[in-house]
Image 1: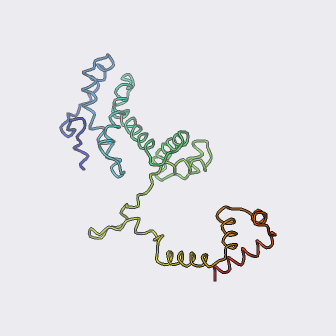
Image 2: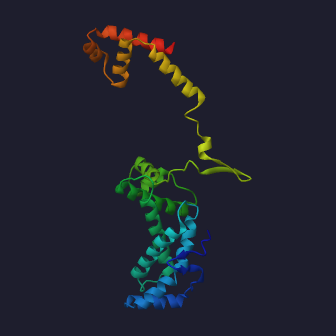
Image 3: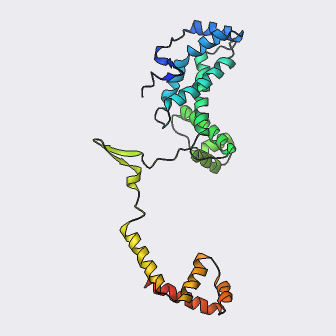
Length: 254
């Protein structure tokens, strides 16, 4: 899919006008005065800004149209909240707003549900991680992130892991001339020949036990009762239950 040409609400963004700095400033002024038409022009004139941010997330398994719409929400917030008295370019203010909105969407729509407090810690940890990476030109350690946030390293690690998307079993890990190798291909087969043959042998071995031995094993390993409880139920001593259980297990192993 081409990110430079996204169809959204019947608008082809590849044909949108790009505002000059002077036009943007004038529309911002009119928007603050309550001019709704100017506000609409301001939003449409900055949709390419949303596209540039969406491209940063193109490697994620997300629909670009969805990210574009979410980014537009961030743009609208930027248009409504920008302070025209400050000596800051609108794009400088809007880009972090758009990024924040998209990251919040991705955080809140993970496959695994985590608590709100954990998501908030993860969100702040990712912000700190990005800041320290830009500052030191390297990825920070969990200890450095924890120190900046004033929380334990354990909380940082758990929070960041909670918002990582699960890896699909059908994620390609290698491709050789169109012949892809997927994650699922690297996993062991839980139903191999040796497994089901072993299960058949186990069933046959249990079938050869006498009635009392079967009952003891059922009580012990299926119902989870202690040897004393089994002894009281069938009217023999705990030592006898122990010997019968040991003998039955020996027969199965043999």
